[in-house]
Image (cartoon, rainbow, N blue to C red; front, side, top):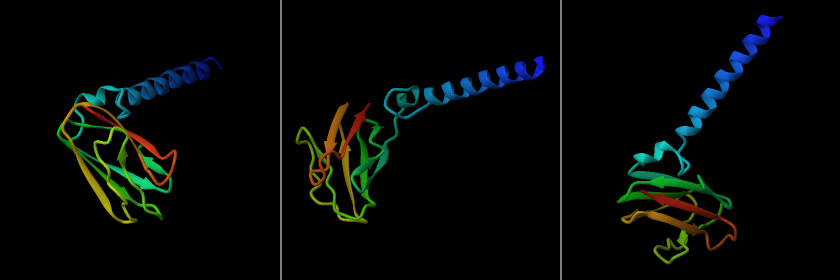
Length: 120
């Protein structure tokens, strides 16, 4: 019985180490994976959600929002930097980010449909 418990403990520590390593490499705007953010990312517009809701792109990088929902959406920055107007289902909108910072945006058609782009 003792061996079984030791094996479970070792397996538990290995699982914990793997989970911590995965978090360290996450792309949620907080981990080491963001030291070299990609030059281009795609955000999916679904019915009342942006996915991912938070993403990171390099300075001078491009974000493409693609509408895979059933209705039109917008991607409109809270600071007035960009406004896609209506993006119909199956269509896309691109915006290039030339300055580092954090940019909040929303769909003006659907209250609560929000997202954030981190530019590094």
